[in-house]
Image 1 (cartoon, rainbow, N blue to C red):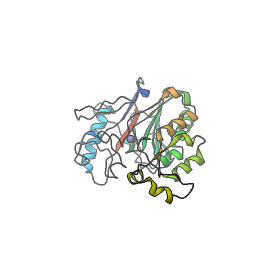
Image 2 (cartoon, rainbow, N blue to C red):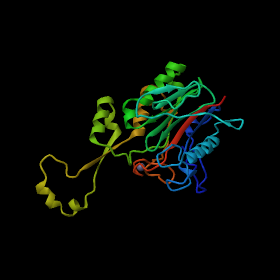
Image 3 (spheres, protein in one colour):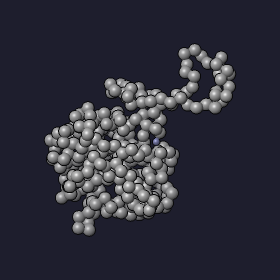
Image 4 (tube, rainbow, N blue to C red):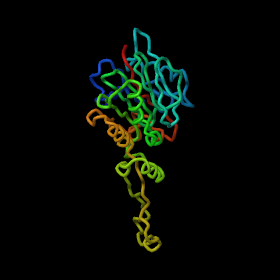
Length: 291
Ligand SMILES: [Zn+2]
């Protein structure tokens, strides 16, 4: 996914290379740049109705984003369908204008509606069936990933639209990456109970400890046998976890693309819930079908 956010500070949209060349598809992933919110550093494109932000500013941001992404028909904006996201595996089928349903996935084959998931570290995932003109958007944090939200998304597209996995193209948008996504040991055990490949999704880093480094002898004698010398930090690769789910249900590897942008590393252009201690805006990952 090429980075097109320049120094201009203008609203810009990230597009997935894996979804290029589909003439009827409208899609994009937002950044934090070029909006009307006064919070979160100012001129922020906050697209979620967060506690602190003004509703009117968010609505203005959404309007600008929809226009920029191309979800328009004769000066009229497409209805935007968002979810009340609950870290579940609930997937809703949209066949008209849905009113903010509960769940973490939306699928449709109806033209002229823009499906959206809101994120700020969790992964936004877009699936597109190029043959049957159907698509889905999904919100995948670690909880949704354990519940196989994306794997089930392919299943729902098969059920509703007779989608074949080999016709599906996938884009995993910006989210928190393995460089920054520290998790607890309990998260690893949960993945281990669900996925045979769980070991491939985690890596450990020894925490630097200047006092231990300076006075190693102090700790040598005090250390109980069998314990590691330094505390370990554990990191999860959520992108790989979701890529593996898509591969497992038969989506071809060449059809899966992932953004190389980590929300936590790139707070200059993206929102990160963790890195900004919850005081941040929301990004949108969107997709729709031109009529
Ligand atoms: Zn990072």
